[in-house]
Length: 243
Image: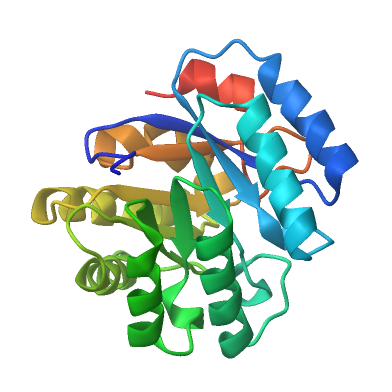
């Protein structure tokens, strides 16, 4: 099932709850919002404290009940790429398989650089039905235009035409942001795959607002004061300013 297409402009919000009480509170905040853009919800499982199957399934059920119209992206971000889960590649791969087979999702984030056996994982995910996959790469440093372009090419080679590629980098200067936007624009014209790109940090905020002009299909706003990544604009502000 194709949720995100290459010409879309989605507004995203990350649920960063550690337990059911926090999850219920954050879902309540989302339900109270009046937004202009179509909303996609990301469940960041690297914040979730109890990884028992029952706990995950109960949280999953609550998300689906409270936000039945919003597509659900599930992400397990490792510390190596800016998340909170300290996992080796074997464990990360096993967790992805468990998530894909036991939870109800529309999109699943996969970090190829953290996968132990890429071929085996692809074979397992193909058994999961027709949801959409996002192949993501998070660089916790500044990158040149050429480095961004090479990362996007690498992700594009891994993804099928209806799958999504995502690149997040850190920006310290406006030039860092421009380098990412220009690489996004070039990939937009050379690949049929939907793109998601963003630059983290305050210097990267402009990429979150102007991303759709350059070909990025999804931009995340912050629901809480901390957000889920450095430089996220408040969700309401992003909704009002998103191109």
